[in-house]
Length: 247
Image 1 (tube, rainbow, N blue to C red):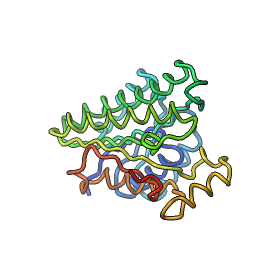
Image 2: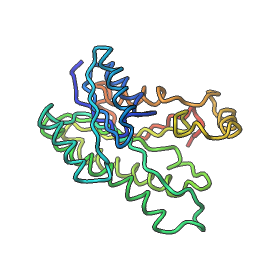
Image 3: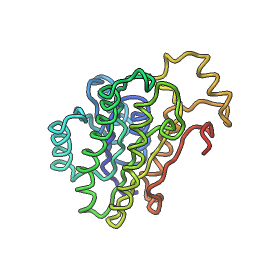
């Protein structure tokens, strides 16, 4: 397998960390982007390198253009550019109903989500186009297709991301660049650990596989989409939810 440079935004915890482990195991050089989880990012790098694989922690807020540019400049100048982008950075949002939410609260999530994905994809696609190879993998959510109360801002932002991905797939395909969506349902991570047990049980019971996903379940799909074997797959939306969401 050819060693590729993989950048995972929001890569220090949860799904991002699981993806970093999986892609490093596949022989890729992994760049773990983080904002404030310095210790977790450092520990993950140590864990991966202890296994004989390559990993680097890169601090940057992907809502900030200057910091994004600095991160890509470093990878471009020292390692030859990003080959695989996993756009996974988590953007906070205000959980409110439409009638209670202001436009400012709604648009904050929409802008943060799309700005981070748009700008990182733009930088990544630049080096990918030169190499005639690239993988753009965006982490969305089943909430973009299956609404839930108070998730208006989150689901709408992820819906915009889903549409954005299709346009990139169409435009960048001739350059050997694929763009795909991975849409997890409920995943057991630090972000969801405080959810009520009753809520988790309801999700589990209504899931055909009778389980709630763990980060590794999502990482397995990312792993495939990052591989050479996915070269004829682009513009897709893959829900990783055990069949809980069936369109």
